[in-house]
Image (cartoon, rainbow, N blue to C red; front, side):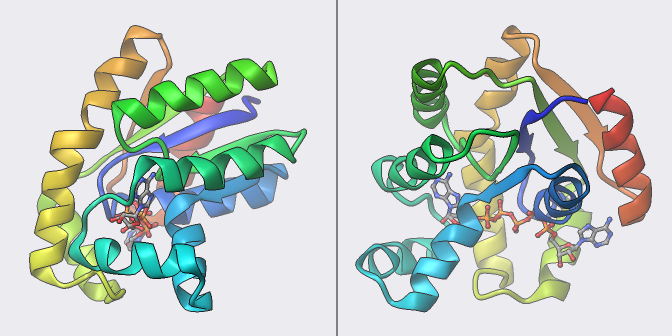
Length: 182
Ligand code: AP5
């Protein structure tokens, strides 16, 4: 099975839910930049203080800050990994490509989770995280369309995109993902 993966998709598509399950079952490193940033915020670190207001608005934290987090984690890990919520724009994707070249590694597949906006918004409103109120969710979706969606073409050109329908139960989606991973 493929061992070096990206999970791409809009907020609420279920990237974190599915990434965590797959990482546990396959022994992969689950690297969620959102979770790592929230941990920094909770710890009150300098990095967390810098990120907190940006996250509350539903905007993207600076590339340099996120890249530093990813670089340190990937450099110290030899096995397979699953990146969730990173990269988020073309600059981050280019920086990841450069980092992986340095490490002599390659992305094996980009799992693209696709879901209607109405379902996304409903899922996030039911969760109620600090950035899950309706206005911020709409803004996160806009940021996704403008900055992250271009990565679909970016990775399609590289022959890496595997679309997965993200509606249905967690188990149904898990089975669809397993089937694209081979
Ligand atoms: P991040 O934490 O990455 O949030 P997101 O992309 O907005 O994604 P979500 O966690 O909201 O959704 P998800 O697709 O992971 O779905 P989940 O499984 O949680 O980023 C947050 C912020 O951090 C960003 O706005 C930005 O500020 C900053 N940030 C992070 N990465 C960055 C980067 N690389 N660069 C710059 N800034 C960055 O599921 C959602 C809900 O639905 C849950 O309640 C779940 O239980 C439920 N659910 C899941 N699957 C199902 C299902 N099949 N049926 C019903 N409910 C389901």
